[in-house]
Image (cartoon, rainbow, N blue to C red; front, side):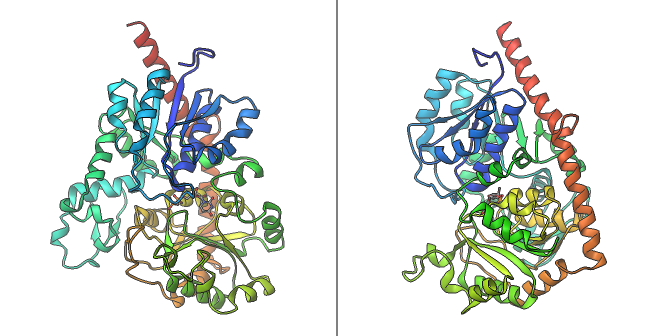
Amino acid sequence: MNPITGSVEMFFFPFIGGGHQIPMTDTARVFASHGASSTIIATPSNTLQIQNSITRDQQSGLPITVHTLSADIADTDMSAGPFVDTSALLEPLRQLLLERRPDCIVVDMFHRWAGEVMHELGIPRMVFTGNGCFPRCVQENIRNHVVLENLTSDSEPFVVPNLPDKIEMTKSQLPVFLRGPSNIPDRMKAMKQLEENSFGAVINSFRDLEPAYADIVKKRNKAWLVGPVSLCNRTAAEKTARGKPPTIDEQKCLKWLNSKKPNSVLYISFGSLVQLPPEQLKEIAYGLEASEKSFIWVVGKTRARTLKDPSENGSGEKWLPEGFEERMRDSGKGLVLRGWAPQLLILEHGAIGGFMTHCGWNSTLEGLSAGVAMITWPVSAEQFSNEKLVTEVLRVGVQVGSREWVSWDEEWKEVVGREKVELAVRRLMAESEEVEGMRRRVREIAGKARRAVEEGGTSYADAEALIQELKARRLAKEEG
Ligand code: UDP
């Protein structure tokens, strides 16, 4: 309990990668808006980024702060992979918890070592996995019910059993750790343990998006669906302050978009982690140019850079076809961004008619909440499941046709050719009945997302319910 205000005291302990730190920060802001005294636990390196995201909330009087731990994890560019070991934070975390004794801590599953200290100090922990109910159910049911050895090949489709929808996957689309018990690394087991004996899960999703799957998840364990948390960013300033400082000036970006017709621009991003091989960058560029559609392309990291090619400066510039960028700029067809884009601001602009995405859960949810149909291009993590949700369950996107799961730090097994890229772009950016249907459905989803987080909505109610439960727990404890 916060001794001054008497409100419930919640701690949030985000992982340092973009796809985890950003939604956890937004989650803390959501709970602060419900009156919980929210503290985000940061390392010295990521304090500033987090502080930037909450300054406006503080100015308007919301009970939210950052606490900086005395140890650091040297990764400041938001691309920390799940294997980064953060256990150097254990002792300063223990000290903080001892001093403050919060009512609960929402902890990212990648801090896999953290369960023990929370258990020891009797602080209830809620685990944040960063994904939604549908991918959880898909993964869980594959893990528990599919005998992959019975498949004749990696490309043979199998139906994921006991799901509300008929979902077919292939072994090639599965994360390595789902392909057999011998592939489960110790760190995965530790993550599972973090979830077991937890107080429950805080999930960035909303019931109306995936009602049947939300029911399954809530039946299995306690869970609070409080999203889409990105919707707590209401002003342009809040949207641009998320994550890293954007490479493009907000006004320049909006001016470019304002010059385009509604629904005419495709936004392309592979999130904060995916590293495209140089050959893939080229194929995307050729495919885009051939499609003749307008686009904003956030060229993220290239694998050449991580492989330490001395001639690569990290911008991907060297790998784009000769003169591509100049042609796109001069014709006004395309904006190539390097580094970090103000994604929410872009997605919510009326000129955006499609989103080519790697199907990270946040990007997927942000695209849906903005009412934008998608070209799905899953690469890693649970992204192939998210693709199924978008294209087959919700029917608001088309698949580019990627088939091979790769770990974020592995060599790509397949490059999607320019023809497939062009085809998918032409299909999604066309004025057709099919696309009209997708846009109608995704706009309905966006409306439901907004209603979920407003007073009277399910996510609003779940956030309130968790706070009430923590209050009741504290009272019971105080009464002995
Ligand atoms: N993001 C952004 N600008 C960028 C790249 C990413 O704002 O240039 C944000 C995006 O809005 C999302 C997060 O970073 O909130 C990426 O999370 P996601 O789950 O989509 O993918 P990951 O980066 O974890 O693979």
